[in-house]
Image (tube, rainbow, N blue to C red; front, side, top):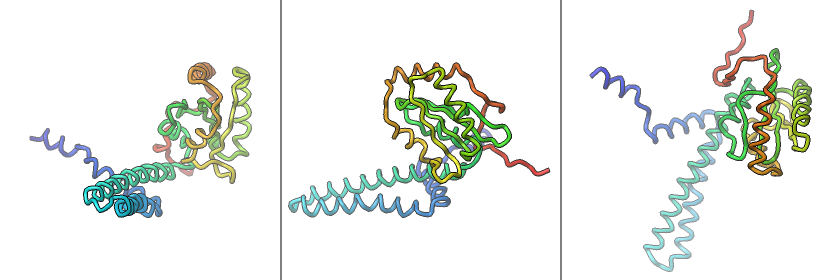
Amino acid sequence: MARSKDTSATKEPGRLKQMWQVFQMTRRYDSRALLYIVGGFALPIIAGILLAIFLSDGSVFTMVLWIVAGVLAGVLLALIILGRRAERAAYSQIEGQPGAVGAVLRSSLRKSWRGSEMPVAVNGKTHDAVYRAVGRGGVVLISEGPQSRTGKMVDEERRRVTRVLPNVPVTTISVGPDADSVPLHKVPRALTRIKPTLTKAEVLAISNRLSSLGSQMPIPKGVDPLKVRPQRSR
């Protein structure tokens, strides 16, 4: 009996309850999420009703099909919008913390890109870091922190890469407080916008070659932005 009670107490919430929790979290950090979700749900339904009126030729069955199709499309679109807004809200909570870029590379990269949550270079004093991703667009160095502090690390890492892979394009992306920096949640989109120049086989070979370079990190492995604790004042 005790074991069954423990099992029921630790049972994960159902799918609908999880979605409700995600919605509540998203609305808490994104005031416009509800408007986008409602709009995404309503527009396909309105379109379905209009199509039912003008294309059904008086057939009740056809009208019902158009309206049902609109409802299903509305539910799907609302779920897609909720997922994207929830992801954005989650990243807004860790934006600016050490390791935030690593969390994005770990969870949000498309299959055509390879990245690691571990930085290839880091400043132990300021916690500024440089991350590396490899895809069909070449090698991308992503700096985390103000450009005035990360510029030197990015240049050094660029030289390391070009020394080993002189014919591979190297792109840099900055995530930080600067005006021209890329917001954290837009990093995956910025990678996909880079023009493809390599084949999948070349991406794999380049990734393996860069892995042999190692990294320049004075910090232990396993940066987790969700577990970063603020420094205590002495």
